[in-house]
Amino acid sequence: MPGLVIVGAQWGDEGKGKVVDLLAEQADAVIRFQGGNNAGHTIVLGEKTYKFHLIPSGILYPGKLCVIGNGVVVDLRVLSEEIDGLRRRGIDLSGLRISANAHLIMPYHLLLDEAGEAKLGRREIGTTKRGIGPCYADKAARLGIRLQDVLDEKILKQKITAALEPKRQTLREFTKDPRLDLHQMTEEYTAFGHRLEPYIADTPPIAWNALDQGRLVVFEGAQGTLLDIDHGTYPFVTSSNPVAGAACVGAGVGPKAIDHVWGIAKAYSTRVGAGPFPSELHDGLGERLRTAGAEFGTTTGRARRCGWLDVVALRYAVRVNGLTALVITKLDVLTGIDPLRVAVGYVGPEGASFTDFPYHQSVLHTARGETIELPGWQEDISGVREIADLPEAARGYLDFIEEQLGIPVVMVGVGPGRDEIIWTEAAQQLTVTC
Ligand code: IMP
Image (cartoon, rainbow, N blue to C red; front, side, top):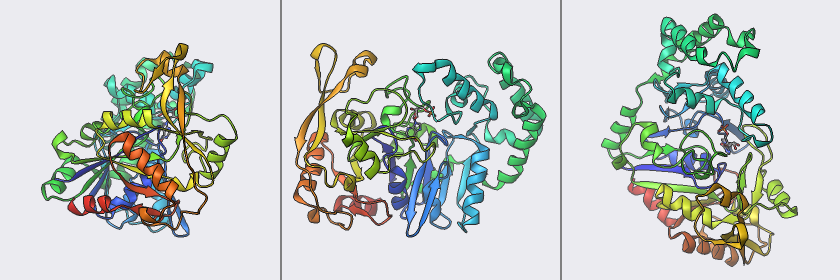
């Protein structure tokens, strides 16, 4: 029963899409289990670049079962555009399935996200303004609209009416806004229902059947551990659980379905939006990482904050996700930076030292990374395909990470292309036995 969960081990944007894309080739199904179009993946395939927000990147393999699970929140306008874009480029979408239980991001969720951030002012979270938080809030309040609801116009209208009722006060400045017109909304979403019906499915059995046959199922997480609403740097987090445990809930399988959990981490750290970031670099080196790593959001285009690798946060990610292996991406971005530094502890208020990730917000907000120096390398590594062929200092960097985290590094990204990756023997064995 080889279930493999892929999660972000940092603050998102670790390059999960590329790893999922590579693993998808051998998988029976790829299942996204949380988040929405706040996420974004870029896949470079030869001369072509594909950007995904909702559909798992495995869709580039013709007929591959790619599932948007019940734990995902779906903006049907965005999904519809993504489908059209892929069709125009000749991509086969016959493997796409969307859970009938997935909740929908409605036009009022976008307005509420915007209004919520405006109200917070200087204390804003820096959300992607894609309506993610308000949609998950409605789900928890049992006022959500699920994909199955768009298949019945009468039910849909009733549910939108019920969902809008408690929001009247907050949305009063938009009362005359055509985006909130009940009839228009019902019509538009019923039309989406007609259009998307062939893809709407009861999705957990897809995972059960593949796992029963001993086939590989990849559970794809979005965002990252430190953006988790329970385990991340709350309140500067997203509104779902990107940690591995959520794969079970968001895809409809039990914990015994999970055999491996791979964390994806960049060779350095980045974060978008506000919130604590102990190893952040505010100098020219941060700027250099941003430029060399093209650290601008796929979804919002926002510049990402950049910093040194943070093993305190990574050790925490190992524990909270039960990581069995690590994939290091973008190692090539560090080429030419010598020496390198890695945060191995934090200095908090009044000089207190921390080697474990602090749970308290007040500590986290003032914590600064305590770094150690490691040698860098100058050689271009983009053509390297074996760990043994990496420069000694790059091998030393990976060894250091393994030693600090106590889990193996099984793949290493050395460039943006699909083939610019080192598959270690351990990764090959894991995917073969899967
Ligand atoms: P939301 O998910 O749009 O509500 O945003 C909440 C926080 O999560 C903000 O700091 C966002 O920048 C961050 N965030 C959401 N999705 C991603 C992502 O895919 N990558 C990186 N940060 C993200």
